Amino acid sequence: LAQSFHDAKRPPARLWPHGARNLGATHARAALLVFSDPDVYPRADWLAALLAAHRRTGGVVVGALADHGTSWLGRGMHLCKFSKWLPGQPEAEVDNAPTANLLVPRAIFDELGGLRGERFLADAWFSWQLRQHGRVLHFAPAAVVAHHHHSTLGEFLRERFSRGIQYGDLRAEWRHLGIGGALFYLAVSLLPVRLLRILSLVASQCARAGELGSLLATLPLVALGHQASLLGESVAY
Image (cartoon, rainbow, N blue to C red):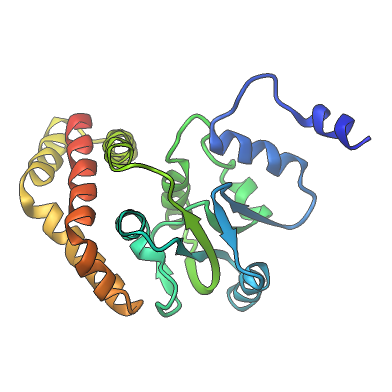
């Protein structure tokens, strides 16, 4: 019976991650939707902490992302990708909600039409939509999942570069960038302007989380990852 139920829900072709989340949401029956990733490990009180934060705020809740592992490479990759959502930081409003650790009331999810299933960075688009509609993205540092990083250095840099291209395309579409806007973003992405700003933000986020020492130890890798992303964005612009 369980296998028959599973097969009945299986789509005819493989879906992108956010398309799969949309499909899951159509079968869910609760008033709250919680999204995660297959390469994260939730702490025992993770869901309870997400729910408690939702009860306090009544809206969208973004949980924290810790690093699962102790390697230098994994730590650097984690700080490059997830410094904004490190555990140990205070509760706050954030501007982006990764679906690796996210609670969304179904009414809000349906109001925005779900996630863009054809986009790999659909959670960024969804976050922009939420803020455009006056919704607050509340960061709950007590709701922790640990992300497991499997990539080699080469895989990590290629991923950052490809995500940069995708993000640049997404930003250009969202902001309706013309030639002038694209040239502006191209210039600040190629020059050290944005890289220095990003690294200063990462440093402040790591300092609030008590991770400044880890950042200093992995700074070359963190900077390299962000530079790869910016090069990808430059290609898009």
